Amino acid sequence: MTISAETTASDGRPRCPWSTGAPELTSYHDAEWGFPVDQDQRLFEKLCLESFQSGLSWRTILNKREAFRAGFAGFEIAAVARFGEEDVRRLLADAGIVRNRAKIEACINNAQRAEELIAQEGSLASFLWRFEPSAEELAEPQTLTVSPASGALAKELKRRGWKFFGPTTAFAFMQSMGMLNDHVHDCILREPVERARADFHRP
Image: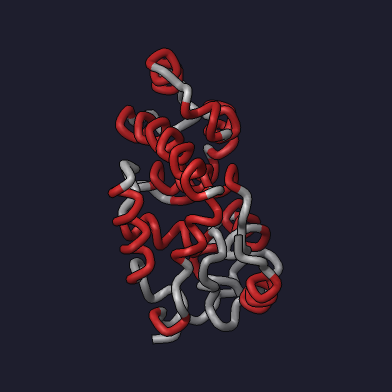
């Protein structure tokens, strides 16, 4: 089944259906979603935010993103890795974020695991981009919520001690960070993202 774009954003141009329900979703869709990323800090931020999204909407997380950045030291991996119980209590008292102890502690744990991974692999980006899915394993855009590649990434991160990051979360991460182009065929961003992926130098 091919999913068609919708044209309910304010400018009337066709976009992915999920992005047209609110201005902040449209802005995120147009400026970020699907464009390839190789900066470790941005990748780690998205790994954390996708974990916090579990059971919630992305709009909720997006509206809280600046508060998350403030609370988690801009998602600087080394800083978050050194958070302790006082930071957990601080974050649990922060109404601007999702106050879930298990997810907060998972983010801190994952920063520590990210430091280990960077020491072993050179960078978070170089490790993550190894799991870029092949075109052959993907169906039509936005008809999947998991893939063999997302399952493999989630399994490997779990083996390395990461928490709150399953195959569905991994697939959403891959979509957003440009590891596949999942814009629907007639979306105005599909071709710009395709060009960006073609020009992108994999780490």
